[in-house]
Image (cartoon, rainbow, N blue to C red; front, side, top):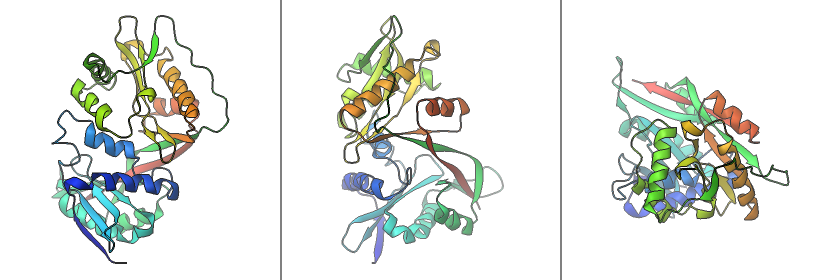
Length: 305
């Protein structure tokens, strides 16, 4: 079947999102983005016109019927992310070639251009494609962890004295600012603000208020936060983000919020949950202790030319 490509249009967002949801049951864990990640790029912004998807070129591939079968987008300067229906993996060399032409950045050494692509360890086909185009596997990357909720017992959430477990109130801009303050402190950032969280909760289809959990400190500030966007079609919870304020760590706050998240997911008949992690040993040990026993690791592949 003939496939043609074109640049992204303003009305393409929902078909792009639908492709991610449609391919969950027919691809390995982490093969394409979860729809939460795309929702975040589109709606977790203080400016909904200049969102993080449209800042760099995005290219779509469609079959003869005009159905979306793949696309390439960039998350940061000099990277490319391939989202593709598994029946159309033969277009991946063309997708990579497009990314090299449109998403590469100036090299920091003697090379003129560089491009990075994340590849899962199980994905032999994509590795072969990249190796044939002179990419080299780097030593850094990340992993997607998975847990099937099933019938396994989870401990009851235990809230430490003085703290309060509750959901966020995104209609209250003071709550939105508390989230921004916590994210900045927990991840050592300075750019989060109340409006981006407010927009995400108002417009992102994956946001579920009953699954957006915080631990309030005695002074009313947020000590820990666990958001659980939900894929209703595939009945999958996605833990993102999971964080604790540095002044409130080692009290089991994030663990308690995640246990509450498990209970709430089970109450709405969710099947499983995922969490994306980096290479940090402590974080991965924490998620293993929470029961995320299946881990799908990937690495950055880099080309310089």
